[in-house]
Image (cartoon, rainbow over all chains, first blue to last red; front, side, top):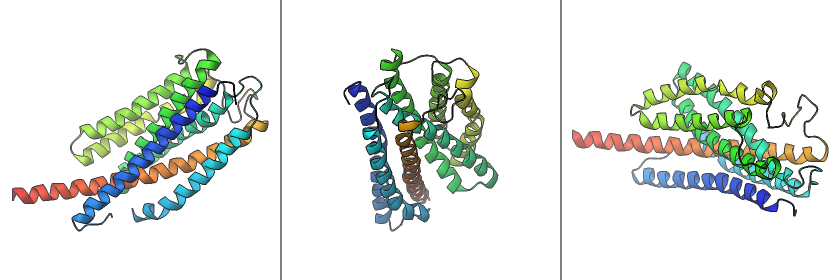
Length: 45
Length: 231
């Protein structure tokens, strides 16, 4: 790959950032909410 | 929503394997004779565009079912599919724009396909804003379901925009009318990435649905506590 490498890399990094970032963010939010609910004696339904 | 927790890990692992296979095929596929290596952008752009439409189709179905059955699970799935759909639509528009610069010589054109896709992103953002603007959760759920169903009119416009109007955007990548569909060496990576993106969409939907369900449970607990405090 040497032609348009910057554009191709840019798209793959963007897609990884958006989808990977969202997955990580939502996964951490679930864990955080789970912990808070657990502290209140509840569990995720 | 316990079933979502059960499928989360296997679906996540399957998605990672499918993405690894897809990226490997993308990297080993030959460059296009006209587009050169820029064709590799389309292996993200086309599956992402398909997922934008599929997410919205799913949103329309669960919204209609919600208005009929009034099930909270359906509303949770609707809220989650708006966020997932917005992510795919954003990546579709951004990757298309990055592909357009070297191929068309412009980041953006007010072409029918691009414009109708932008309308979809604005609609999804509007659905998020509407849900957040209404305090009563049932009213918010109903209003967003109705708007989502009305907005579904954009789906055939997006899909047929390249057929109905003279556009800069090329015809459909799969089975285009003028036999310009992608075939040969370029097809395996596109198909592999399409399968991987369907799995990715499913995985993101599971994650976001669980997040929405947990957040609602936490908010209900806080409301309950506030009401007890007032008594």
